[in-house]
Image (cartoon, rainbow, N blue to C red; front, side):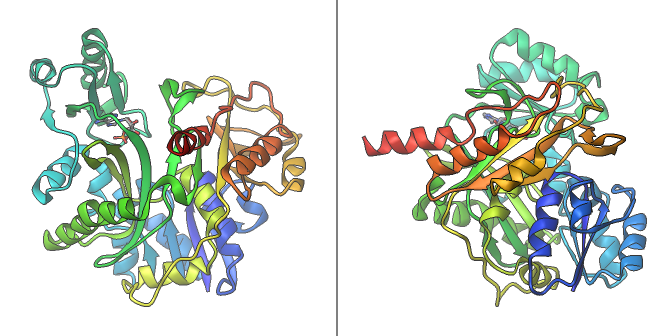
Length: 428
Ligand code: AMP
């Protein structure tokens, strides 16, 4: 089959990379793709927020199957547009994509469906927000209702921080219109896990658990980013924990979305906090996570395109996923200034050296410049490798990272280490 991947970041490069290796795939297209993707797929310029433009691209490429990487096209209704035109696509409808598109929708849905999540209130005014602060104590979590590219959530440790975040969000200063309504919620404590499934509207196939690292600096310090690295190791959750997450969170979500008239199809990503009283949902995303996808697809060991086609046809009854046992690690290389305004236009050296060590180097914020590939965004590259155990996977990934250079390059040096620490503590 011919497959089209919508998007142009690290997640999409990893998707293209995995799909290009599938026996069932004849050709891969990307809209718009990036310089790394262009080595594996034909890149076609497109406006990813415009379903009609994306449909035009799929038709011109003759795509048998389309996968939407980012949330913007999903929230804008790309799945509705493709289905109306009889084209196979993986993802939720615009109505179901509200699980990510609106935090208020998502929290109210969880309350109706009895899905474990943090206690919350929704507010639209400063007076209402300040009053709500008294209810939750400190720290407290403030969330912009709308899409904010990972920048709409603030965990405030002090009352002053909380008040300043409320003003910044409601005034539009921090994330624009997305912050005109807020969710204020209790701060949960525990280990965070990314749990992603692929659903056909009725069933769900779980992917392996992963852990993201959202803070910019080592030790989970500094401001939040889109994700500075992730690792995938089957030990992140026990079999009993996985069943618990499926039974208490994933399956009730799919069942209630169906019952409410918006069956959920595509990738459902539950950001979980594993609390002392069990897993609780921090957020839903309606697509694969980034960088989680980069290490997940490194471990995937089956014809992914066939499973995705079955998902698009809304029948996963005969499908399954297979995984390599070796854990994988993805380290994000970011530009100077990130997560603020990133510095752009610096030449990148050493990608081939990293690849020669067996790592997959996925492009996120790059462009072709006169002197080769250069930086063009906050998260520039994702370097992914695997090894017989997590220690080896971490070592190999950082060895590959050290081959790559660009002016102002920043990365965390502790990706995956929280897994090592946890398992060392369990053993001792
Ligand atoms: P979200 O986009 O809702 O997942 O929030 C981004 C990040 O904020 C999460 O990955 C958590 O680290 C943190 N966070 C969100 N909600 C909570 C909560 N209720 N308690 C503690 N941390 C939270």
